[in-house]
Length: 564
Image (cartoon, rainbow, N blue to C red; front, top):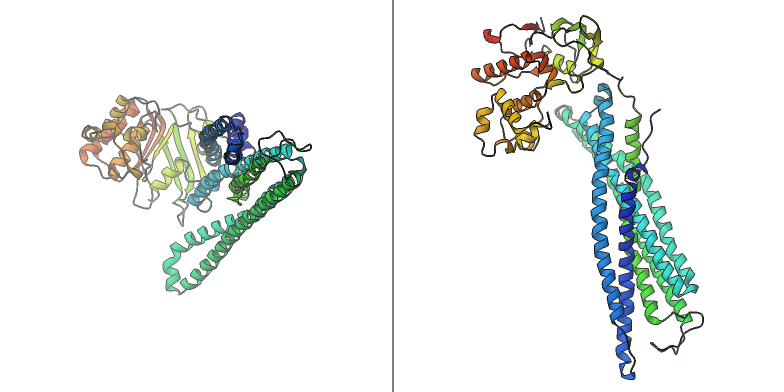
């Protein structure tokens, strides 16, 4: 039985580090409150001491000034340490979540990953993972800091003026307001998530049919439907803002009530003839003085900062729960059948295709039923007119398209294996017509194929694909940036860089879709000879190439023609 994901797992994998970060946050919270309260007391006492200085009274200002400086230093160091530790833990958390859920995504069956819009699902997966950090940063941590602030201020008030227990109780209502606010935010967060999905789907589904909608005069109906959906989304946002404003207003009212009740109780307790800095005290309240009353009031108002941090995002808890639910839906989906390792003897195996029916997800009809036998010993060229299904066959062999019907098996003299159930363990390489080049250096892009490849290996493999002279002309050499999506190089260079990345490590199966397209004769011959050499050296097992080009110097190859 699969185990679902719980929000508590966001902190359990680094619990001690989170506890240390929260400890720094608590120290910062208390230092902020202490700085405000002691500063208020100090200013009041300094002013009073100045007024009675003619009476010969003495006020030691060095000690409270030192305490204030101490609180300021603790606040600065604690806040810096808290932010540094929290950011480190959040980035570590996001990394762990992405590894966990993208790993689960990769285990899903092809049909599950591509049912509907794959890009939309991937976007939602990334967003849900990123939202989960709100649970720690905007729910757990602010709740903890607010509780610690209330305990600190409440403890000081109770110690100095025990009869002000009602003021402390009034402050406790802030927790009630925060709890109700987050509870009301659950429904709003669910509506927000649903409307975001509906708006995105509506827009993406409408754009491909834009021409037909205009021709059939249905465009205005579509615009009205989208506008109505957008109005509903705006209404949810307005309710969210209203919830935030009302909760902050209630917090302000609670703080004012607590401060007024505190002042009223302090007034009742203070003697009318109390003289500051004398030894005259009250029997019931030996520590009470007007300066301390001001300090307690400032502490009450200081709680507002921590309440605002908690109520700034009333939907944070709801969004985290929605993201958790959707990610659990991903975890609970059945994964593909466990694959078996490749056990066939390389060089003596055959790929047998029996009555295979293959179809691209976006195609209306499958390609013609295919029967073929391909030996590992010789390269295989797949040929046929455009649209015959050459790329579809390679995508199916690479596991990117499902096999609709028939069988594809790997057979040697001892056994046979179902092709779809073989775990190639990184030994299958596929160069499609669209390649992935990342906004990194040339070396970084190449090392995605072999992380520990040396610079000499990178130069050698670039020479194999005909890019050696080009590399020598680059001022930055292997450090040459390739730009977003490989915009800094031509399309042909990008494809050869992607091919070089595949050739860095041995491949039991290498599938190439039009690797010679756009190359001059000399470069095409060089690339072909290097592929043959790599196969002779045992670095390539089964080599299947889809191509429109063929020349006599290719030597002993087998040909599979599709569409005849």
